[in-house]
Image (cartoon, rainbow, N blue to C red; front, side):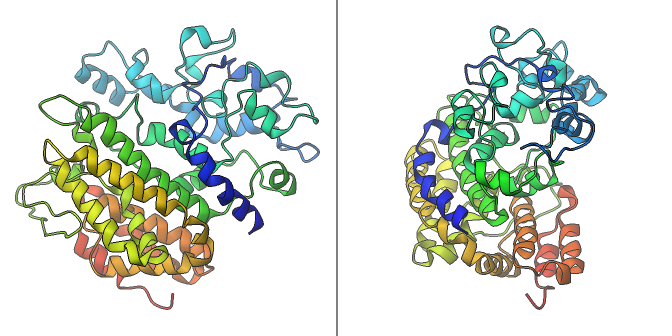
Length: 424
């Protein structure tokens, strides 16, 4: 608990740094020396994990054999990628910056060392930063983690920094986005929840006493909550950069809910939603990044829940107009800054937040697939955190089944499944 408190004490400071923290490796200035520089058996390429050192030393083997990121570049050669490239008018996917920005460590040529290879995909330095300086010093026992970070190591142990790094590809940022054009060409829809996606990654580190001493002792509930806050901020950022500043006749439709349009005309799903406020036929924003803020605000700031609902509604309404969007984004950003100050209460109120999510689900408030998807992942990790996942596993599997296929999502079936829980 002490480490969680220390983390939140530094949260306000970190959140004010440019782009919410350290500059992500793709945009930082350090040279990327290549995965091969990390792969030696005496460095991070050991076949078996070791216990006599601060790190396992088998990180390269775990990444190369088990981590899908290592195959990200190779995906650009498959038939789906070839079709997407043709549809976009590209010669190929594996040479297009549009694709390489997220499927490889696509730093400029002048920042590529002699052993650097694009074919390594999303490799060590894609996440941990260009090793030009820290490569020769990070193994020094007298070198602190803070010194390594100063030398270019990206602080993935810091939840804010990790969120910004992961979201830069899995949501998009100021410079890159899975646009409606890209998805129209065949690219799948993007989604992410920071704690769940972190847990699904094959771990190449061990949170032991040494890790806790050098870095931060992780807590799933805190990772989830901070990830949700950053997802909300990233949503505001994307709308600001790719919608509010756009002069195109048609807006960037990837910022809107795919399923608002992509369903059969005979499948009439529309119902009035007070938090959206748009009339039938309107294309509503993809507010997955805001969906879990609602239950947290209800628990941590109940006196402000109506204010947040109004801010959300105003944002949706402004997105369909030519004026007012900038003001809505600013007001929402101010609210999120105020909400951030309450996040230190999350560890002790996690069960209340879970119950609020269940209440919202039982009342049918997750009509959109993207919100239901976030709700299921949240309930899963909050059940685990509160020690009740084991006895809820059958029900949880039923809940997951309702969001298994986005094309056949039925909000009434989801609501019914939410009502099926007992004994939480």
